[in-house]
Length: 507
Image (cartoon, rainbow, N blue to C red; front, side, top):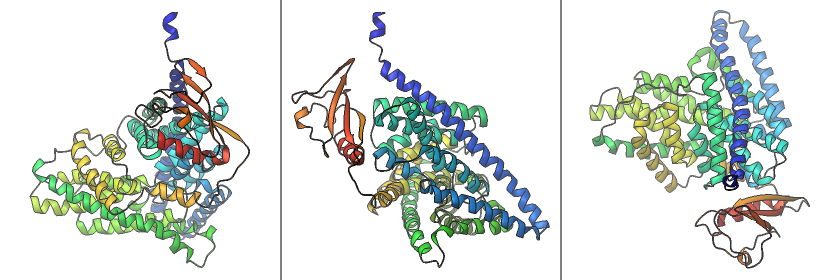
């Protein structure tokens, strides 16, 4: 019985919560993934029928426009479902946005299924992350957890969503640490990883254990040609800069159109009809395009045509504000760039055609890095979704090169700019509602070894309780903070985001 006293039950409880969140989020996102596959699989038959019976195009156009109307109405009723949803997730974790989890859960699920199922060129990653995140928020509300516990469960749900969407449990963990929190915490890692693995286990049973982008065996890339990888990284960063600029120019272009804002969403729905009729392979997020480019050497002219079509198509769709993610469209554009670069590199080096597949994978990671500024996530994600663990070193070279050049070009992560633009218009005001959040003191942080008298929190926030090992006590001015201490911070809800930013800088 004495040994039980030394078990850290608080950490075990977080693992159990992570498993619960992972199971529910994994089930919901797996259902979302299945709904997309089922709907999208009907599209080839529909467009094949339309080519043989052109008169039915009018009827199909009315159906597509009605679906567009439903999606637009859902986005109007809850604007937080628009776009990929990752910026909204970050805003909620920072305390700068307040989201209605019930509204987002069903609206994001339904709207994204309709958008992706029709073959509009956006991805499932963002919606999967946001859906998983609000599942975590909902479970926390049922468990009556505080704000810090809510943040951990939202993060766990988001990781579980990505894991279930792409059979990528490690990527679910890494993306939360690198892209969302920008820091490591023992409790956060435990809970998020528990959720991510649980969701992946569920997805394995439904979709199988095959990697999401199984591209076949990869040849070992020759060391003497690594200079080409550096050059590829530079070019991908430049392409990422162009993609980045276009992404934030599109809303300005839409604003110049002589139509109301709520009609913007109809444009991608109208354009998907001729796409399916004339170039059916361009429907969807782009996984089929990636597989084709990696399997068969494609002419440079055709790759340039695909690049232009996918680049413009994604910008039009995403810029309209309809729900949808960026990951698969970004990877598709990266894959096409890799195919073009590979064609040129193979001429100069005399390498075999099989190395085209390598360039395709390397370019996907580099292009993702240039836009997201998350090289570790890119490396782990590409390794998991392609199953090509032997390519980690060359992927890392391309990703790090792309990151350095993107940094020199002054690129910021897209989601952070989106969040800033969204929250910059929301004033910080006193709301009169007290919120409690828990903070774990990290080793070698500014909080480690700090006296309470030195901890001056903004907006009258206060540390009201400290949990150290199995003891809880009220802090005094001369109390010294130690690694592993759990601080309970009380703050007004209106200032919570600013207080959290301040603490994150110290921890």
